[in-house]
Amino acid sequence: MTTPNPRPVVAQSWKRCFALGMSRDSLALAPIRLAGPELGNNALTAAFPACSALLGEAVRECGCVFALADASGLLIHVEGEARARAACARVNFVVGADWAEPAAGTNAIGTALAVSGAVRVVGLEHFFGWAGSFASVACPVREPRTGQVIGALGVLGPADAGTTTMLALVRATARVAESELAQHVAVPASSLRVVGNRVRQRSGAGIALSVLGRDRALLEIDGQTYQLTPRHSEIVMLIRLAPSGLTAEDLAERLSPDGLSPTSIRVEISRLRRQLGEELFTARPYALLRPVHTDVDTVSALLALGRAAEALEAYPGPPLPASHTPEVVRCGQELRESLREAVLGSYNPQLLRRWVATPDGNRDRAAWEALAGLMPVGSPQREQAAARAVTLA
Image (tube, rainbow, N blue to C red):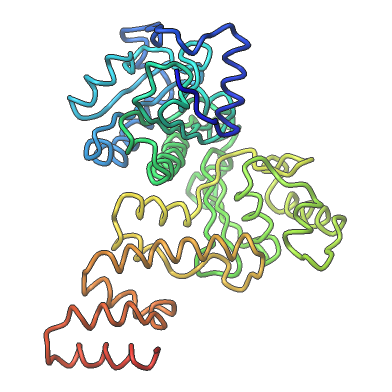
């Protein structure tokens, strides 16, 4: 078998498989461990309708199949177009099959569970040769309260299943799945408090971070909203952008290349803990203990689904626009460029008019030219758009 030069995440997975005595020439398929009503009892079942709504059409269009697996790698839900499901069934990508690394070798779902991170595995990067004609992507799904990995969402199919675009869509869908699970977490009586004549939840599962178009982030934790200072907004966003966590030294360097003191970062984190509670961050390094859904995730998910109009509606501006922190600025630039490309690629005059009415779009010469080209010849709208494009030349 021809062996590709594997990427590090793949090489480490192969190493784990070899350590278990596996052979890349093996013809053994992923074993089917379980069938029957037991599979419907998993807590992840509550998230499947949301996953289907976001992923279903995309996987059907590219001839792929998506699955939800539990923490052990057991597939508990599988969906896709009939022919694609039949093709995947031939390699036991079916409900009840075990796709953990020790059972199925290197594959996106099994490896995502092994490393607790999003993974893309293409062709002969799969450990077993029989999977060489497939591509796969997967992302872990975490328990909303604890952040513990409780399963994985993955896509299997031909080459289109292994693209970075598909991985972005799966990652965004996993975040939505976690938000959906948060709504199904039982709330103990001790976590409720009375406000006036209403009962409100004191603690539960959902955490939402709003940073688009605002310098002071809004952090909603279990129904209670906090407005953060600009510095705290940057800290929380940086930690959110680094799943493996950041030390005080890391944060100091990212926030101020000129030499912000790590001690001052520890003071700020201490203030954040007093404001938000002790159970949001780990220490050494600082990392989020619970999944946090951001409005950046929402716009990215809509763009991945091809819903440019809704994405533009959900985009009031870049994240923390007054911030000069490179990671925050980069995040904003990437999101803005993805949104711009989707709008320009829509060839929709109404959508283009909405884009050029934004601060970013108003300075976008290509957008004004595209809008002019879509207006009727001789119309005032065409002349106005063309004139604006000229001023930006």
